[in-house]
Length: 308
Length: 327
Image (tube, rainbow over all chains, first blue to last red; front, side):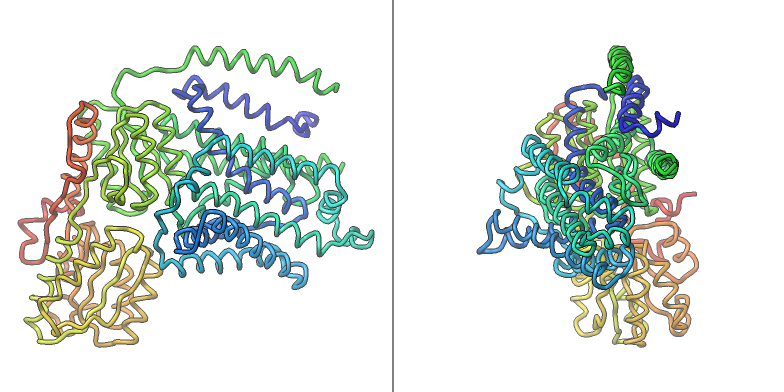
């Protein structure tokens, strides 16, 4: 049982078992169209979750990702629909916005020595409110067709997601920067004494998280063909649940983006199957809450096994 | 490597189970309609959902339900899931007029009829039918009646309006209806406060409290939704201005929707007039529209619910049509 729970393939087995159990009761679940739907739902969430993985590895948390998505959405949309704007400039503005919020988060923690929860909660509220304020709560429509096509093109989104996962996996598993991230998460004091630039590492992690949230915003905004000041407001729990289900520890120092892929797959499967079966929304919320609770319990158990 | 060897039989077993399950997937012959609500967080939406469910059941149509919790992207995913289910029709309560467009486009591509409930889509190259209340006319008539009643008590009044989410076309139409309702009365009414609420009760409470502090002589309030009435009641009570119709210091109060809170306040004499969306008409028409589209019938892009105004003088006669008055 200990080996099974500690296995890096644990979530994969759970996902397969879940799919096997639900398939008889879920019409169209195993159809090719539904497989594409699952991929389509999964990929932008995976991109945000990959950024959150980096943060959790460092022992932090980033609550501001939802506001980054909204802020990037409206700034990009406003840029693209302005007289001098175009798609490239719009996307650049979106990415810059995400990186800037990440930088503010990182500086707040590294220089200001404030807890990640408080810093990112503050930036979540500030930039979320800012997005609503600059748009006066209205959507920005009329986006260029070639921008909308990015979010609508599953191959393009898949390429972006695969590239991001590949790069992050390489960095985490093969580079000094990756080792610094894990060291910072396991014990920042020890890491600092050992020569790890903890402040720089922490700041860089939050910049990456903000940047990846902005990439996801490009996809979500293109898919909805609208810059929305409330885009992505509800996905934070899904993001954190997926990362924790995947095996990343809330206590820091453990996790990989490949595990996060499995966590996102599982959470997407749960959403998809419950939606296809037409169960009431209240049942969906209860089920997802149960899944998140189980993920948190599992994290505690696996951390205990890892330390003993 | 050892783990991989031990894992292989498990993977093969799981794949075999999946293959068997594929052959066992359930099939239904009953027509199915997917219903996607933005939220169920108000009485109006709950009454609408219940009305749609009852009408579908009456027609022996199976209903699949999904709630997006205010997330437009989730709503899009839910619509796409229903398209994958190859439902016979889709009813959507859009979060807003813009983000519903790609949902309609997906349904159009799949050849599945789609009807929008309560909120229309913004102009686009997509095709859908929307069943919507004439928010402008209902609000105009409500405010107009309220203004005439207010003038019986005095020639000049200070007014406030609680606005909805201005990303919602319904909120914009109600705002415009309010202005149109007061326009014929010229300077008799001065709107001193326009309070943005985003359909949020906390924002409404803060906004109306501030308005009453800044303008203690406000005696005419219109709210774009009955949802915000509890916030107004709380603020009026704090200001000592929560008086029944006919009592000195009564604040003329008008609202929109027709929920149970509005009905109770009308009976008690605190609310003067309420613009009502005819939920029975809306839900029955929506279901009929999706079934007719499925049968190949052509329908206009918009079907309008003209609603009605209920006030203390016609409460006895019109209460039976008010959805919030039903037990």
